[in-house]
Amino acid sequence: MEAIGQFTGGVAHDFNNLLQVIVGNLDTVNRNPPQEMGRLRRATAQTMTGAQRAAALTQRLLAFARRQPLDPKPVDANALIRGMSEMLHRTLGEIYEIEIVLAGGLWKTEADPNELESALLNLAINARDAMPSGGKLTIETFNAHLDEAYAALHAEVLAGQYTDISVSDTGSGMDGETLTRAFEPFFTTKAQGRGTGLGLSQVYGFVKQSKGHVKLYSEVGEGTTVKIYLPRLLSEASIEDAPEVLPVPEAA
Ligand code: ADP
Image (cartoon, rainbow, N blue to C red; front, side, top):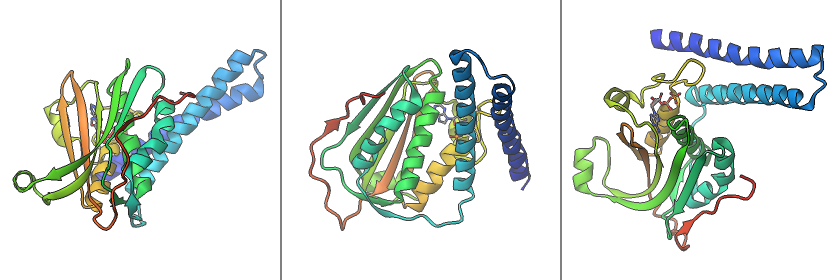
């Protein structure tokens, strides 16, 4: 309860800061409309960024406080990632290289597609934050067989066939404490207003609810890989497509 109290106070504070930016900019523009187009653009861009951050914050809170159950459906993870490609390029920006490598004949899985998209976006944003001066984000899909030996080593993992979505970056990596605490709700190493500590806990909660498994690999100074394993949906045939490396969208 104490952690939740602290967190609520922190979020209210962050949200208020973002509103100050938005209100401040609108007020300036209202009072003395800038003569120059450049200044007006900068003010609206700042307003937009503030509003987007505030929206992302409330999205995370809503996801965390979710009262609705997930809505699992058969999912072709390759198609879902293809659909996110342009948005990922726009969200990360020019200093990042994004490589998307999709396995051919990927097994279908069953998961809530909106939550899966949200989980991948959380991972991409974490990757970006770990590479402040640029770097490479790689998203790959695989068919993975987790065998009995692997299951014996990992509590709560059932041996079997999984769709593996792997998100890697060439960023700062995590130290030992961060690695052990990363999935804890409200754990963040980011500055006030930058992190809520809810990204990886959303990923963890969603994957566990989907009867999957999530694994972190990280090396300080080298980068991080997050692997999501979602159970293969045996009632649905895999899509018989060839492996594919997605091109960078024109508009990015
Ligand atoms: P937030 O991003 O709001 O801090 P998360 O739950 O997503 O919350 O992440 C918790 C912490 O785990 C981060 O503050 C950061 O220290 C660490 N972390 C997560 N992803 C990465 C990554 N790709 N590289 C390095 N550190 C990471």
